[in-house]
Every structure is written in structure tokens, then in C-alpha cells.
Length: 598
Image (cartoon, rainbow, N blue to C red; front, side, top):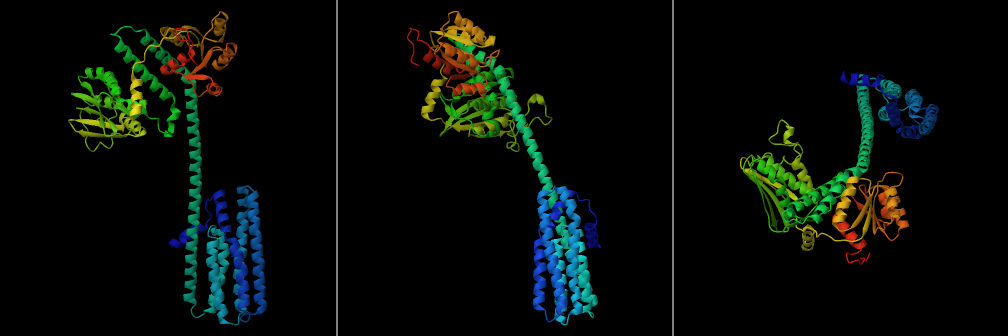
């Protein structure tokens, strides 16, 4: 009963959409050329092999009938393929679905007509062959038309009836047994065809689902790319305004450094300068997201003074530790240089110290740096609550917090150690933790030791720069008053005569008033129709003796790239003070009045 139910369900009209019908129709047509070839080969072989076992005129009539039917089948199949290439799929399926059913019925009737040869047979061997032929045709039909059960019924029903009649006439004494055998065989073939049909339907559904997923993935990817481009456009548009105050701060701190003559204030000024450099470094990296976005490339590793960093971190968090009744101190050798990315290195150590202070109710925290073979190892010891061994593998996962099961946002988001892990990984380092619940923890990470030559360069770079003394005149064009004031404070502290204007009109007026600058510095974004590159080119053409440089907070802008391609000096905001000193030493006359070599 189950087999009959499945077969009736498969043969009954199903809610197949036009696209599914088209694919099923194409699947059944792939076997049609072989069926047409069999319609030629089998009758010819039977005619040649059994000419004396059956009336020759009847045999030739059936053979010619099958040859004509096979030729017609092949021509119809070729027509189907041709129209499929040029006709819309829905229209093609609607046109050929009933046609193929008629063709299947004609093929079935052609093979069933072979049963009529039994009346003209003079040999029992031929009737047995005829019966076997009917069963073979049923097997081929079940594979050829399994994709379209309706066509299978139209093709197989006449053949099955002819096989039953031939069996009844050939085996009259075993008719009951042979009838059961024929219909059992037909049932197996029907089940086989049903399985093929269901498999094809599932494959079509899966293919359609995968295409929908692929299309959805493509659409989501396009939206993500558009969002990324929108973000990049926003950063490009906003970076100039965001960089301006940092740019001014860097110059003002440098001016303060140059003007300070107090030994008591010197350490404070250097701390402010170090903090400003950190802000500059962090800010520049945050705005230049494309370098690390998607982790397409590893960060560039440079020599970093671990000793100075530990001192910096201890000084920065000392006040927070004192407020909470904790001690915070550093323990490091006189000089320790590692290969790292400065921003990521600071972020990694900052996060470890913040994490230690947060989970240490009493006692203290020690930040330790030491040399191990060819590695620099940085450790943060605390006397905090500790971590159970079951959690040590999870604490570096995003949003995981051992003591914050209720997600109290006042205790943070649980991203500190995850960011720490990512920073160390990108710097090609190792990290880990040892902890005893109730006694405290030791978080550590190790980096490669910098080669000796690079270490010496890092030590020299870490020293406070000498205050430069320049001579000469500089014209600065910038529309931001805060930045102009910073330029005035910095360049006057360096001994330079400086005049600042806010646009091209002001620059023209200053030059018309007799100003002859040695250097002209132009901001890229200026009010009016003329941008900084256009103004710089115009002024340089009018005063070729002056050195010119373009300043911008958007190094990806078209004007910035055009200036670089034209060979102009381009400086990004915030200005690198070391680079500015080198540039002015080349361009400005020496204090004794001798011009330096360009």
C-alpha cells in the first residue's frame, strides 16, 4: 500500500512551478538521443537475427515503423534544443511540456506494437525474446522519463500491457506466476523512477536555494562594501577637521618645549610632550583604517623602547592606583628594545594594566620587563582575585568577563583582553597567563628583540630633541585660527620670522606688501574656489626662489596625490616635528646668514 500511495502521489498533479518543470523536462531530454538510437539498433538487430522466426512482412513493417518513430524522436529533440536557446524559459516550458508527453506516448505505442509480432511468430524462442524485450523497454523508460512521471506513465503503460499479453500467450500454464512477476518488476521500476524524480526535485530545490543564498550573499557583500566606502568617505571628509586640533596641539607642545627655561618644569613638559606624541600616534593610526582593515597586511614592526613605555604606563596609571589604595610600580632593566608596532604595543600593555587594576581589590600591581634569550618579555603581576583554570582559555575571548555574569556595563564590555590578544598576534608575539584563585595573576606577552643597530637608533630617537635655532621667513596659509596661532608660537620659538594668513587673498596681500618668504606652507583645504595646491603652484610660479610645501589631513585626496606626483613636498597632519626640523634646516638660511644646501 505504501508503494502505491507514493506512486499515486508522484503521478498526481503536483504544485511544481514553471522553472522546476523546465529543469525536469531538460533532465528527461538528456536521455532521448540514446532512446532514439536504441529505436534504430534494436529493430534492425531483431530483423537480421529472427527473419525465419516470424513472418517477414510483419517484421519489416514494425522495423520501418520504429525507424520512422526514432527519426521523428530525434528531430523533435533537436527542435526542443533549438527553441530552448532562443525562447524565454517560461514560454519554452509551457510549449514543450505537453509536446513531450505526446512524444512519450508515441514511443510507448511504438514499442508496444512489437507485441503484435507474437501473432506472426513461428518460433517459441522469438516469443521469449519478445517478452524480454518488453521488460527491457520498461527498464529504459523508467530511467529516461523518471524526471517527468506523467510522461513515464504514458510511455510505460502500453508497453506494460503488451508485455502482460505476450506473457499470457507465451506462458499460459504459469500465467499467475508470470503476472505477479511482471507487475512486481514494474513496481520496482516505478519505485526506482520515483526515487530519481524525488532526487531531481531536491537537487533543483537545493540549487535554487543555493542561488538565492549566493544572490543574498552578493547583495549583503555589496551593502557591506558600500558601507565601507561610505565610512571611508566620511573619514576622508572628517579627517581634516578632526586632525586640526591635534595638529595644533603638537605644535603648541613643541613651542612650549622650546620656550621652557625652568628645570622644575622640564619633567612636566616632557611628560606632556610624550603624551602628545602618543595621542598623535594613536590618532593617526585610527584615521588610517585602511592599512589594517580586514587584516590584509601585518603592521610594520619598528624598534620600541620597552623601558620608556613601562615608565610611561606606570606614570599614567599611578594616580588611579593611589585612589583605589593600590601600589603600582615598574621593574625593568636600564634599556630594553623590542620589535613592535608602537600603537598596538601601547594598547596591549595599557589593557593589561587596566585589567589588573580593575580586578585587584587590595595589594598592588607590578609591570615587569626582562630579556629572555632573543625575546623581550613583558609581565603584569597583580595580587587580585585570580582566575580559575577552567576560565583561562576563555578570558581572551571577546565579551567574556569572569566576575560579570549579569553584564554590568559599568565594569566594561570584556573587550580588553581580546584586543590585547589581537595586538600581540599581529605583532607576531606570544602571550599567556598564570593565575591562582585568591592570590593573583601574571599576564605576559613576548616580542622579538630588536637587532643592535636598530636598538641604538631607537635610543637616540627616544631622547628629547634639542631646541633648533633658525633664521629666515615663513608664510603660512591656513584657514583655522587655532592652527595659525600654533604655527606662530612654534616658529617664533624656533627663531623664525613668520606671517600667517587664512587664504589666497591674504597671501597675495602679504606678498604685495613686501614679504619675501624663504618657505611657503599651504593648507590643502582653503575657503573659496582655490585650494591649497592651486595656490601653492601659483605662488611658486610667481616667487620661484621660495620653497613650498602642502599640508593636509587627508593623504588620500586627489589634490594630495597630484601634489606628490608633481614632485612637491607634502606633509600630513599632525606634523612630524622631527621631519619638519630636517626640512627647515635644508630650506632656511642658517642663523649666521649662510644658506644651507638644498
